[in-house]
Image (cartoon, rainbow, N blue to C red):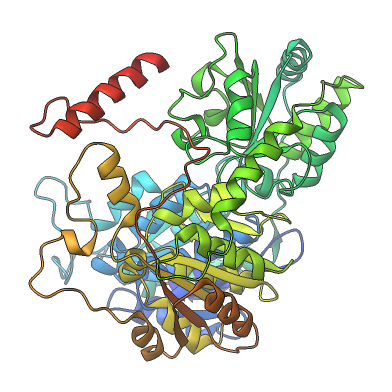
Length: 607
């Protein structure tokens, strides 16, 4: 057996560079890195040596560079991924939030944090956390509950089993998610005689599990017996590449579709069987069908509470749930009939077994009525002194969008309004991080999307609160020459949660800047801040000016940041659904007590 002597770090990056997807591309498309004493000597040297075949990117913050990696994988439907390396201590723990985001959303990313010395000679090393009762614990144990696979490399030869397991996890459609390989810093530099065959190129095929015959038969019978079925399309439709299969299935059998946040754009918005978003941020059209359906057919969805209206939405007492999902864990939620399968394969087999079975056309008037009411919120306002709403900002972006536009967002006010109001044409033209609802994902995520699909027009929607949490990767985008457009809606605080606070009877407190403790009023100049990082930055006062600025941004070669002041209070008064947010049982505030009474009535009605 021929061997090659490499350090553990050198072996890691050489192995990763030779792992391919079905298209013949490197599955790990690059490595994001912030170096520190825990990874600069080992991983830093190794990455430098392979820089011609495996690109290293420098981020500004460990969490946000991981967000860029995650967005990259999501936009490519999990066909490719990225790795992220940090030093030990705070560099590593900064990435835990990103790992949780990837875990919730079932997205592949490889975390390579530095770790303490395996030999323990310099114990305790700088940044080491000491557990008084367990000598094996380090801060990287924080990754265990938010990783699909976790391993601590304390011997260089352990990579021979750990790296294939990592790749298996990231490429397996059922187990897909974040992988953490904690690399002890002394082990990174240790050499071992690895088999040369370990570094030969390997293709990882995307597995498409077929359903169990009995489960398939039960599912077909359930659909045949249904009178008013509804498909809930989730993110798994995109990950499976099943958008065409979904379209063919619903057109053949006449079943209406509602979309989750992750599933939005699975069907074009104007397809006659797409009845729009479902749930808490849903359309009245989709929710009306959901209330009366007798068979909920989930396709690639994990039935999050925003989708189900905290399980108050499906009101038909005779309704059943059929869950087509590649992950068995998700397929049996709430006593669902499981159909464990790849989404595309499952839809094709269901259609084959259903034959010519077709349901009566759903009421098209529901959809027409929804758009007649919803479109008013995105119309351009008449000129005046009132601040525009976030909904009108969405309208401006929609009117200037092109076929190649990807609109993206995460957390806060915009996600709900985008879910309801954005008209997505082609698949993956709508990129929302709402599984973990993580503020600060937006700019880094936009960077990752543009790196994944450079030909797309990427528009990032971000509120002032989320911008303040994580904006530094804007400087990375400028440095790398990655062009994207960022629309900052400045409503002077956390407008979304302020509205929720008011809806639950609370006084406006600690959300909008004016209701927070301060000595000096806030005078943040977002335009100057973005410009200081090298972006082209402008402030607009009206929706008309915003539309003009969005058109001008297309001709730019650098990131463009457009800032517009918005009103923090208005929200669409159509669509939507109840969401279970517990209200205090006792309070001195009359408004809280009234909200509690409404809450108890809603809980009783759901139960």
